[in-house]
Amino acid sequence: MGEAAVPGSTPRDAIAACEAIAARNDSTLFHASRALPRFRRDLFAVTYAAMRVIDDRVDEDFLSLSTELRDAQRLAIVAEVEAWRRQTAEGAHDGPLPVAIATAFRALVAPSDLGPGPWNGLAAALQEDAAEATMADWQAFDRYAQGATVAPAEIFIYLLAADETPAGARCRLPHPLAWYAADLAVFCYLVHILRDLAKDAGATPRLVTIPETVLTEVGLSRQTVGAAVASGDRARLDRLAAPILAKAEAHRRVGRERIATLLPSLGVRERLALDGLVTVYERLHREFAARYGDRVTELPALEHAARAAIFEA
Image (cartoon, rainbow, N blue to C red):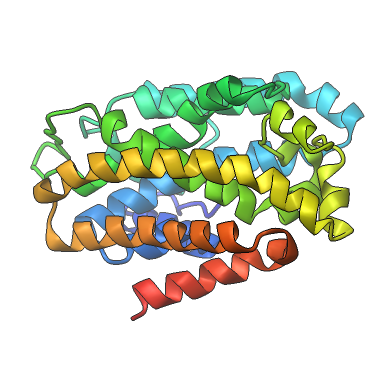
């Protein structure tokens, strides 16, 4: 569940514990955040750790269980997600956040004007995961993505644009956060799904977040896509990737247009972090479009290479 702060430790200690959680995950988002000024890095670390802890509880701890254990524990995980939502969105003192994260959250996020929306959104998506809801088509995917990826992206846009004030972070943008975040978030999420397909399908079919209509079109299901990866069914995997990549590209174009209107409001380091993050996923998108099926098991390495070229140059 993450590091716990020693009782009486300072908010700075708690934020450091959140930074350790973010660094341990080694995500591209984390590497992008390292370019930011301290105030924004702190906001990133705390919000990321708060999301990571509940996401891991659902995806890694709960969904990996046997059918019998999931059925026995479903009500408990649903209640835990709701307790997390109350703790983050409503300021409840008790909840599943470890002491370090809760301490840092109260010090840095609670006084801000971020509001409850992103936390409510992510909780809704995690409740779908806990319920093992079906994802029948792209419409169901788009609804799910509002919480699973747009909500966290809203937080990232917020921490890039917010001003540090004595009362806490304050953000003033002409459009709602989702207006800037939604399309690029879905673009990155779709690329992320393809990047992690081998790992997710190998762990459990319940982590495959591809609509059933897309899988059925190429003769697959959430239960059989792992076998297609394991057997090296390159042609089928290429056909599976094609509509996902096409949808991703449509979102990328709109997202880039909207982010272009945000960039003048950001500082130099904030622009570099945001552009670098998107550029990593754009490079992966091009790689996947050129060759996907025969490289599906090496895709995380491609991300590391793209990330190094951009953030370590």
